[in-house]
Image: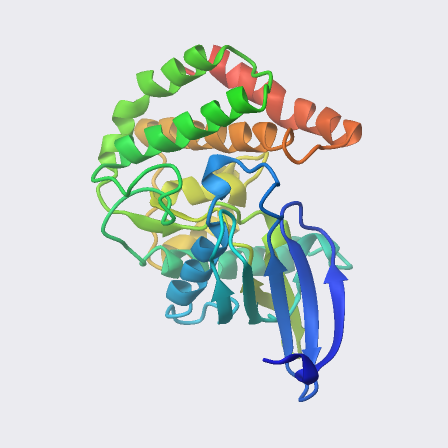
Length: 311
């Protein structure tokens, strides 16, 4: 693509990390271009190289039947955060922007289709556990080791950015370590998106009704436990109550059994995601309104989990 091919360009809103632009070419092609913050922008450790991670996710996920993700057109992964990622535009609008918001039978059908797609994605397996970029350490032979690297990295970020945690960092680390034995049940590294909240699910209108159009924003992806996917899929709620999604996931070949060990692992992954959400607010200079929201939705539940993790 050269500049003389560009017919129009506009910025897209909604992201909190990359600058995102929609580019229209003279031949009618529409591309999405992601540009990370500049080299002087403070990053969480896992955020280093995440454009390369996102590109890898799309390249692998694109092999899955009946799953739509952006196709990678170009990638410059130079620098700590990466230079740019160019990809195809996908059909549909983010779920929260739909009018009317899906409800009743329509919502159940969409969630079931989403479940089938996620099950297909969870057939993608790797050779080691952890973040593909190696930003928090090399791929590990065990999920317990890799997850410890991930937790320790975000706790180190909390110290680097002087973030107040619900408990001292050493106590938080001990909380994770004391419960880590259940992670040994995970023996196959599965590609996990880890950010499949509603805003990253595009829904497309068609003559047959609305359908899942695409899954986007895979920057947080890692090789790990497929159960970790359920945390963002049920952000601030309980995946066990999402009957339609689970029926679709199981119909698509996914395994979703919620025994005691599985629920313990889910608590670990939820706490990890809450840590990321709370700590990243510092380098991103979140507004007071955003901080108040995070304190209510993330900080307090994390504190409660640290106090009552054995339940």
